[in-house]
Length: 240
Image 1 (spheres, rainbow, N blue to C red):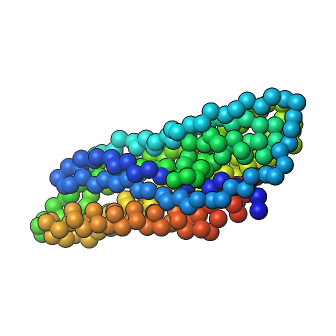
Image 2 (image 1 turned 90 degrees about the horizontal axis):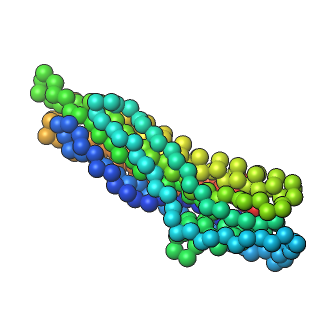
């Protein structure tokens, strides 16, 4: 069983959104993470090169939600990335430094990277001639933030460089999968709120909010299913 570090964590961070003629809709949707056992290598490869120690970090970046308005409908996404530095001349040294210095933690467990997101939405209500109301001008703001390791090479050979590049690419592929899931559900909020049929004006805001909350819950479930189906990225090669 190779050493691996699972990595999905989202931090709820509500975003207040004012919507014309209706109540604001807001959410901070968590992506749950499950601890993964870390198997430390039995043999440490020594090197004449002095390997610097990494600096433990406790700061996981937050997703920055774009400013949205019902005057500008659609989905607006902002994606950012932060890194923490690790060193090593062998993959087991790099793995140990990730385990020691990654800022991505859940309880007593530490992970190599994370995808966090924050989502907000707003809309307006249009009154029809028959005195019913319709949801109009739906706008969703989606902030995605990746926290990833950055390896500072210290005399490593090309074989180790290749292994690192493969690991990093596979890890990022997994994280981008979570971002794709979030974007799909942001699109779904726009589509499904627009599709709400005309209804009593006193009920439509509550109905629309419940619909958006349900999609957000589906997003949580989809992320959990994605991690289950990929074994938190292990089947995608995100392991040493």
